[in-house]
Amino acid sequence: NKSGVPPRLWILIYALPPSRPTWGILGLNRSDTKGKEIVAAGLATHFVPSQKLFQLEKRLLSINNGDEDAIRSVINEFSTNVHIDERSILNKLSIINDCFSGESMEEIMDSFEAKADKKGNDWIVPVLKNLKKASPTGLKITLRSILEGRTQTLSECLRREFRITVNTLRSILSDDFYEGIRATIIDKDKSPKWNPSTLDKVYDEQLDLIFKPFEEHNLELQIPIQEDVCRWGGKYENSRYCLRTN
Image (cartoon, rainbow, N blue to C red; front, side):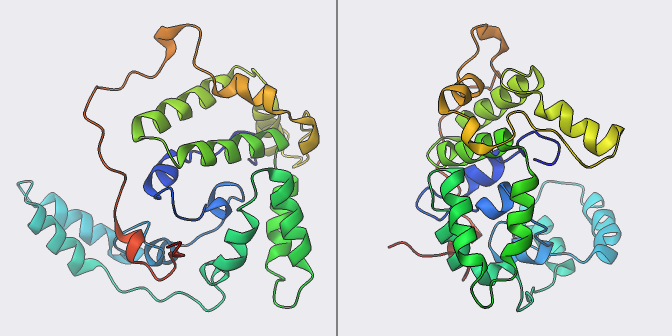
């Protein structure tokens, strides 16, 4: 959203089962989530320290076949157990999930505002700062994409992502993408002029233009037809940071 374009979320959206809480802090807030936190949350399987990556790559390249057990053994050899900091954002999930349970960006912002002044919630201040600096259009597109993606197949998520990207580059709804590039990369004034400038001026009817299928059907993302696979049932389910809903 710093550049005015919604972040690429389909992997995260598809990976999380629909009954689990929305990880809006990652998508909407450009969160500085660390590798150890991603593993602890169950969104990744292994953590390898950066100083070991070269050796890991070298060992993996030396495997002359696709033996999954051999590959897994090598990765396990170089990976380490993770222990997250007490101040990690993962220890704030009850508040995050409560705030991001809102069905609109306005509700989410209001929830964070209401909790920001309470003792121990000083970490919310930079969250709100980032949200308020972001493109209102980009925020609303991202939230809608998260909500829709929680019940879609991988193919549907990929097609939706492609439509959002193409329509954003076409400035179907707003020039915020190019304005973000100007403010961040070209002029570097860090003062983008978003249009519209506030959330209340971004309407659902306008967002429909970003998400609807292309009139030129040949523009749709072409995905090889395969049988639908089950949603990912990976490590996230076993993470202690997974908020149980049943």
